[in-house]
Length: 570
Image (cartoon, rainbow, N blue to C red; front, side, top):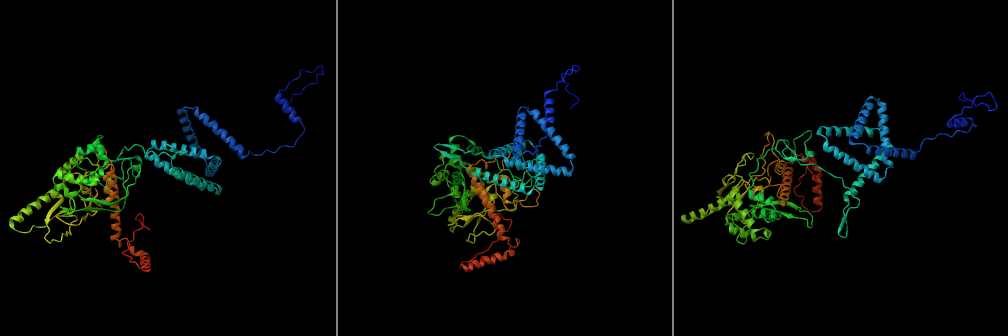
């Protein structure tokens, strides 16, 4: 058959037989065998393809485990370069075919994997993305996000209806798994707590070491402003908001905040009681502090009110708040200790704090000055045989003061003591007035600059003023909003001590108070600017409310329509 034939051994002149190899002999026998019907070749089934793919994947993983990190990195670079060149040379039809094959291949892989394999894939992908995010620059991150968006759009463009349905089903399954994992809680078995196969994803923001170049506030890398490397919007609006630094915090108060001794621990646990005992104005709210063993949480219901009283209390009430600063220190200490809210406070700490506030606070000096004016007026009235005049102390005497460059304030800079000639006690051109004797408390408006230093003497012992509507930004074009003001105040600065963020429970109260103030300011703007907000376009809604009120025989009241941009509006 192949030109080699066996000679008959009976032929004497025949040469020696040539032996064929066994494989060729078998092939020859197969060729000489009678013809049989051929068996049709069928393509490999899906199970065979999956087995071959699984074997190839296992082999590749085993090979990669035996390689060093340098070899693996070199392999990845060569593969990426080879793939880039191949894609650069392919036509549009080849690119479309490759995208379609990739989508189908990914869909098949996800379709046949088990739940454990799916969870393992998600965890591995999350860990790989986390490691990548930690080492990439801002430009690389933006380029990657843009490439991911384009790739996802391209992939979905070539999806078939079956693959699209499968992808949506997989997304719904993954979403349900995340919901179940987030709702699971540790189960109690006796005294031990165990987690039933719960693997929450880690969320590591990295170190808080990125410094804003405008105000030196510390931030996380993820808080960077869009397309910026060292500018942030949360602290100073990328340099547009600049407030004066707080005055140097007294060392005695700093030691109480940061110390580890018994007095510091007691001060830390009862800091809200200490602050209320030394405040010049009260903070009223319906508290709803959760009970239990969890961390402390300051929670209120409804509105928060800030009130201030007269120089002297009523005859049936003990002195409190600013009224204590006209008394002797020892008497003021006894009055504070008689209050049940201060039972956890130490006498020595209260006495020390009282001396500090009396020494450096301009508000304590203002109350003492008014008391001295009152005593001098009583003596003059006795000598002149006449009735005493009615005095009152008015705060916020100059709203045009540049709050961005003030020094240590004194009593005559924050308040003025004037004669109430009319006797009605009305001060239309000012916000806060303290009378000698008055039965009712006066509410401090949220727009008053004295609200914060009066309510939080431990955070602003030097009487640093708060926000007011006429504050301008660094460009002088727009006013600084209340939200921007408080965002700047609660920043953590580099190499500067901020007592607000170190005050623990009092910090929570300050944040809640600031949030309520911001919301009240926004609501007041909505209430008093209905014409500018074009509320007349909602006349149908107002007519509906009026009709419903008439049907129920109730007064509809004044209708205030919130703009669609206001959070929580219809």
